[in-house]
Image (tube, rainbow, N blue to C red; front, top):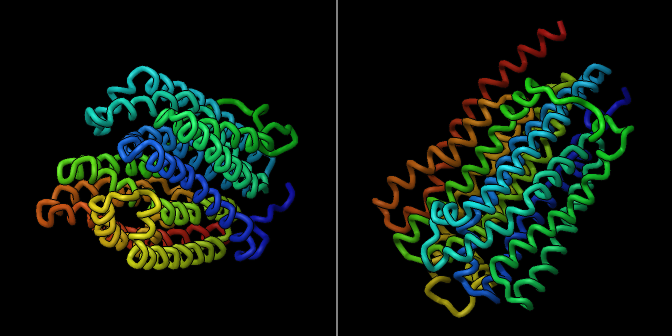
Length: 452
C-alpha cells in the first residue's frame, strides 16, 4: 500500500492540513446555532430563543449517536489502515459498512422519537407552558433531517483518512451560509419562529451531505459505500471506542438541562435566556478546543497503528498548547468584553444582560482548564482506550457536574450555578494527569517489546 502523509509529513504541516480545517469546521458548525439564536432573539423574541435552547438536548441526542459511531469508526479505521496490509484494507471496509448500517438504524429511531413524542421530550427537557409549543415544534421539524446530520459527519470524518481533510470544512461552510439564508427567509421574512430555525438547520446539513458523500461514492477509494459487509464484532468495538464521544454529547445535554432547571428555579425565563447567550458564546471556544481534539484523532490513530509512539506524543503536546492558548484568550475576552458580546444577542433588556455578564465572568474560569481535558479525552479515543476516554468525558460532563450542581447553588446561590463547570474541570484535570502518566509508561513498554 502507498505511504500516507499522516506518518511522513512534519507535525506542524499536519496541524495545518488536518487540525486547522477541523477547528474551522467545528466553529462554523457551532456558529449555525448562534445564527439561529441571533435571528430568533432579534425577530422572534427571547422566549423563542430560550425554547431552542431547551431543545438542545434533542440535537445532542442526534449528535451523540452520530459521534459515538463516527469517532469510533475513524479511530478504528485509522489504526487499521495504518497497518498497511491487504487484510487490513478489507477489514477497514467492513468497519465502514457496519458503521453505515448502524447509523441508518439510529436515524430511524431518532426520527420516530422526534415526530411522535416531541411534547413529552419538551417537558422532560424542562419546557414550561410558555416555552412548550416552540420547543416541541423545533424538535418535530429537526427530526426529519436526522439522517442528513448523521451521514454528513460520518462521510466528512472518513474523508480525512482518504487524505481529503478540507472536504468537511467545505461542507460546513456551505452549511453555515445555507443556514443564514434560510434563517433570514424562515425567521425574519416568513415569521416561522422556532420551526423556521429548525428547518434552516436541517436544510443546511442536507446541503453539507451532498459535499461530504463524494469520496465514498468512488469505488477506487480504500473506503466506499459499495464494498464490505456487516460484522457485529467490528461494530461493537467501534461503538465501545466511540462511547466517550457519546458521553460528551450526553453530558452537554445533561448540563444544559441541569442549568436550565436550576436557573428556572432561581430566575425564571430570564435566567434561561441569560444562560442561552453565555452558552452561545462559550460554545465558540469549546468548539475550537473540540476541533483540535477532533483534528488530531486521525493523526494519532494512524501513527499508533504504524507504531510511531514519539510522533503521537509530539502531536499530543502541540494540541495541549493550542488549547491552553485558546483558553487564555476566551477567558480574557469574556472578562473584558462580555457586556458587548451579550448585547449582540439581547437588546434593551438590562436585567437579563446584567445577569449574563455576572455569569460569564464566573463561567469563564472553566476555559483555563477544559482544553486540557478535551484533548486528553480525544487522544484516548484515538488510541482505542475507550474506558479512559469515557472516564474523562463522564467526569467533566456528568459526575462532577451533578456534584457541583447539588452542592454549590445551596452554598452560593445563583453564583454556585455558574461555577459548577469550573469545579468539574478542576477535578477532571487531576484525573487526566493520572491516566496519562500511567498509560504513557504502558505504551512505551508495548512498543519496545514489539521492536525487540
